Length: 208
Image 1 (tube, helix red, strand yellow):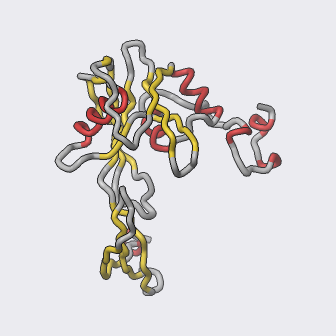
Image 2 (cartoon, one colour):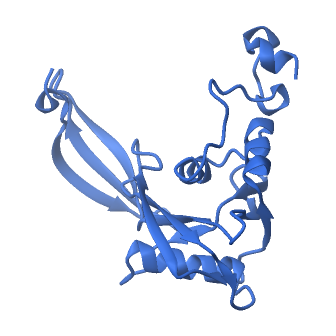
């Protein structure tokens, strides 16, 4: 089956007011190539995102913690944010790193991009590596932000992944492009696997 056999024909689009702060709600009408039926599909439009693996001279990763409203608890993750109008992703990455942590770097390397959720998001998240970061100023947080920062060694990052303390998908994607963050095959600690019957857990997780 070729790509053409899987590509839905776009028929029309419309925007609907949804009161979303970070997204524009778009409804696309498309035709299923398999059976010719038409369907409305939701797309949440956004600018691109960035996140940063920021390493100091000792190779430690600068991590942040902040409350995430979706899950309702504090998460451990890498610095990042949204690409503002007129910015490229590197400029946005440097700005977000400075605003959220007060650190800067003169050594930047692009790590590629991922699709946060291509089922209904249209944007990319760009990963950047910043080396030999230095503290340049105080944090410049927005009124709607409360962020703490901390340095973690590679071992501490790996331990946080295995324990389930670090499970932000975009942070994991970026960190995994810089150093190995999980053993292979990966087995997460039992306490970090909610709603999973014990019989379905790997033996290693049951014993943790």
